Length: 211
Image (tube, rainbow, N blue to C red; front, side, top):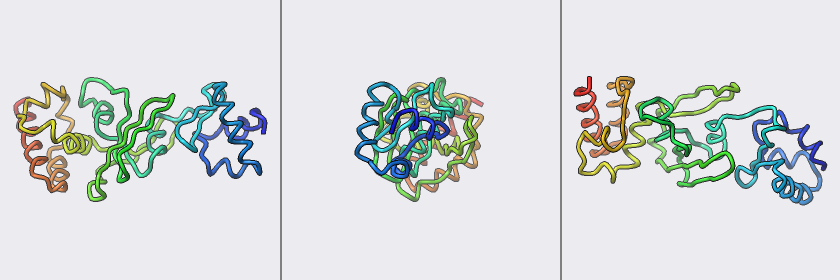
């Protein structure tokens, strides 16, 4: 297959997966060789094994990094530091796109960035919302309260023996009035973890002080 044919076939796709490739050729080995050569020329970008995207000039659709994060590893939703920055709960957006998943912890690095996934047990895989990115594609991201709780839960050792000031001194939390206290408490109880509940109490005390 020539690159022009490949480009015209997939330029309207947000990404290209192995399942797409098996339907376009009867010579998969030759296509795999072509993909390697096209990557060297910068025509095709490899996101992970079996998942590709056309170079920026040749693709019509430019999927958001959140959409790519959801697609790279499923089931997952964007949470932790990236979601905190997305909602303005910390001062800046972080470069790495952080998510949680019920699968094993893993990191993917590719030309679009670093995509980190941390494991949560099935019972804690809740509290995320379905939104649309700039292309109208569905994306899954934690609600603000769940992003805070995922961050606390997955960093409990850092929070150990620290007071309520850790939220501002170490992590520079801000705009906490955007959080719904009742939802924060309700979600926190579902973790069934005393330290999480203690840290939420610290956060609520800090929010009251700041308010």
